[in-house]
Length: 168
Image 1 (tube, rainbow, N blue to C red):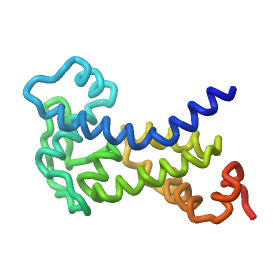
Image 2: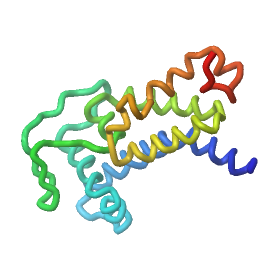
Image 3: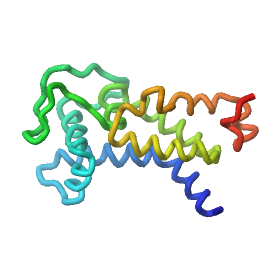
Image 4: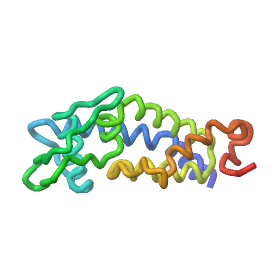
């Protein structure tokens, strides 16, 4: 169990930053005239969400501090008609709509939370990072990103890392 738990905590620290880098790199690569079979497979697994991220990057650009997205009908591809532009991947959503600065802050905060080495927090961080690849709803309060980050503000979390989720 010790190695598995250590691997879990390592994964928790790096899940969100790795998923962010992977999805943003893929967004850039999906814009290439020819795509690798690997990128095509990833896009199929994500139900076309990869192309949506690439489309957003190409037509709206990434923003450091956020920007407003138009609510007009958009044709991303003939296979994927949408009545208005939607951006499902939370990492692309941050970079196009909310601002890349906030994505960096989330990744840094989640990295620090992973360093607490609390089993429950580590599981939540990994699940959040994976779910964020396909849905921006992971920013919803029910998915607890701000609640998790608030743990870093508790003095007890630095003193007793294994009891970060306990109440006083």
